[in-house]
Length: 400
Image 1 (tube, rainbow, N blue to C red):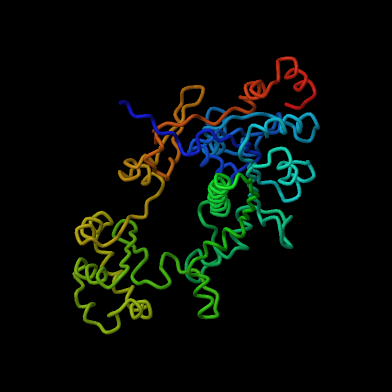
Image 2: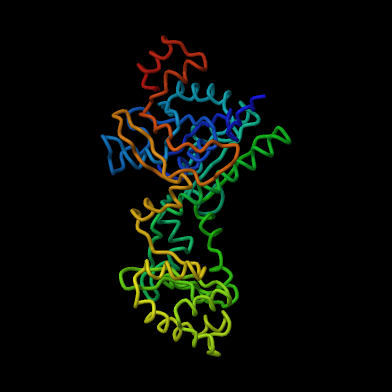
């Protein structure tokens, strides 16, 4: 008997996506990767702000395309009552609403959680904002760099003794997006058991605090705020970047066994006999003496030469890749972490794949491209009972 093809985990779920720019759209993109139908609701004419962010490829924003693939787009002016009525009709067919407005905005529009659950009692409503829906900064404007600064992560990023540095990707937005997906998944399981909807309140600032990891522990135990250490780990040594003959390498000797393997691979066995380096705590305490000893040895060979040696010795290590190095990495390729979409002119646009691999989820090498603004408006409106005449009227009134 032919086996029934496995469905994607979220297949059959409809998401109304009111979000824009990054945090919300990244969350809904991940829901799309799991099989959900995403209806991206955008303002007529202008659409999501990120449609206007470069770089542009064949006249379309590469930024927008990379985080809105696999979605449908409908234009809808929610500042008009007719637009709100369309939204309410759509809501009856939906499972999840995602928005990243400043708190209070959807209440003014009459589409906050309390209003929507009166129409769809089991709706799951996810709000992803800068500072959340409570607290004194709730309505304070937020961008990724604002929460990186306020959340402490910039204070521990950068070279020792240097100025604070922004993390190279938008971790404020993306971390919040991933916690939003986490919350939605939990709410779906809760609804499955109880039939109840849920309100999910994820703040970018909260998300930054949540990933401070050992920085919080170090502050609590020492009473001093941690400072940047470059690539060096604060409590494991040697666990950092080194300069080689031609570039840079990361070496991570995370325990005493790996420390011994590293010394033998470097042909620096005499370091094993030093009382200053017998344990990880001692190596960390004496890192100012140890690291220069390792550096002068590591400078003698190229990164690839050391990679060959350390790989044979089973010492965790890696070149510090630039993005072209990531594209060339055979492991990245093998895991299908570079996929592509094809635009209307037949041009492929490579982008990051889905890191969540599941035996019930097909992991294709291509994705449906991001939609043009309003590309699916008529299709979606007709699916909820609007005929050509009504659609024409909505256009005339500037609703769509």
